[in-house]
Image (cartoon, each protein chain N blue to C red):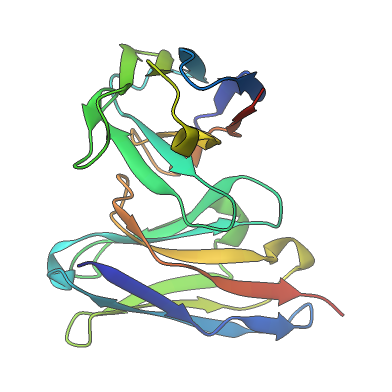
Length: 107
Length: 116
């Protein structure tokens, strides 16, 4: 099974900050990496597929990059609605696996 | 608008069974892989199973193989998860998800609690 790790596990930031979240796969997954956002008490929301393709309606301040085993989610200017937990997920093989999540909260 | 509405969760004793259902609407159900993803209280996301459009291929996470069975009824636009031999560690919110690897849309979830 492909193991996914994320760093940091949590971070505190202010509105307007640039935020970067890292995700690493235990083996190469090409560009088969997705990102999700989850706010407390709600279902996850699909943000980015295939490393860098924003889903419809996702603001352009979100971006994704990377390939192989190392990936990054970047929020260029944090907005109040962006405080949430972010999960990466590999779509390379079964079992599909998620990272443990990165919680972004208000500094 | 895509809607996924789960039902069937509840409290069950270890070793018991439950059958989860998901009613789908707002998209052509028969053209999508479907999945179940769960989230234990206060924990992260765990993919449980997926099923191909025609039901001919099913995949499971190792921890549920032989105990859980995913199925679908394309005529009714419904997805199911039969869960047998439930364990305390199966306690989670179970989400019905559109997609087999790209998880496009999620329901609100149904809570399964396994406890004596």
